[in-house]
Picture 1 (cartoon, one colour):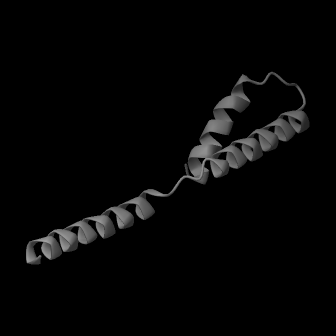
Picture 2: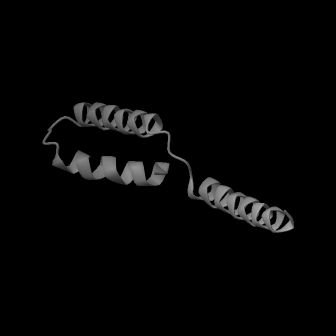
Length: 72
């Protein structure tokens, strides 16, 4: 999840919070954003770009192994 998606999620949650004082609502919003970012970081996720790069490396490696097996 990128920051934009996280902010959209926090915004949706923020709309559910009834509050007359904007300061309290802003504090809750900041806390929720931090909690979500921390949780996602703990999941040890990779970006789509990193995944695609590793997928290409794996494909090249697999092809090289198949080529070497044929030589044996």
